[in-house]
Length: 271
Image 1 (spheres, rainbow, N blue to C red):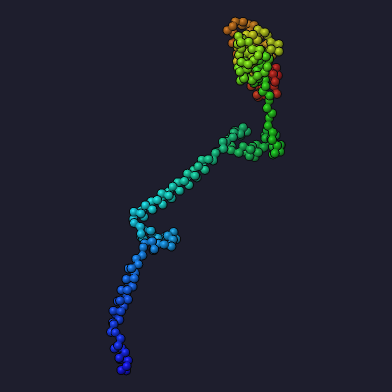
Image 2 (cartoon, rainbow, N blue to C red):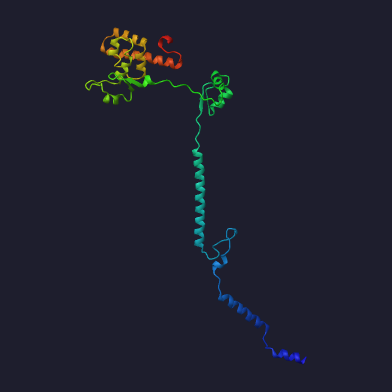
């Protein structure tokens, strides 16, 4: 017992509380000697995974946070505006189909072929089309337009387009420079081979307008005979316009008859 008491007396009389205080002081000194930066708390941390993460808490000020939030809002609004604009453009690019008029029921439909096959399959015209195969492609033949668009040069006796007639006059080798003639004269020369009254050719044909109506009137024997009879009754110069007008009216009637009934070729068949 005496030995144990001496060993205890030999140890320094350091209170337990003071030792704890010194250890705490050393730890505080070590912490203060190495201060942590704000970036050390945020390195390696994914802010996108944590919905409650606010960058303004660590190392950011309120003004910076507000600026970042406003930039994100503006970016989101611009993206949403582009999406809405693209959707509007796609809607506007779609063209609306115009309705087609159906003569059988006098109504307008969008799908003409389907409507005719379902609702008007008993009509003669529809049956004529349905009798053909689906892969067959047919269309009416175009008639030759040589007689309507080509004119005869009365000097070189060549056929040229009515649009090219004025240019041909400059290079025509047989064209006299002093003589002047127009497209009317060229069209009137197309009926030279026909047996028509010479007085009608000289006085009336050159006054008629150069178009399809006058060409039909000048090339039809019955219309020319009618004009010659009127010209014999009225030989005055002011009646020439009356004769050409009457001949053109009959030619217009003949054109309408041919449009309604293509089988009719001349005025005698129509009468």
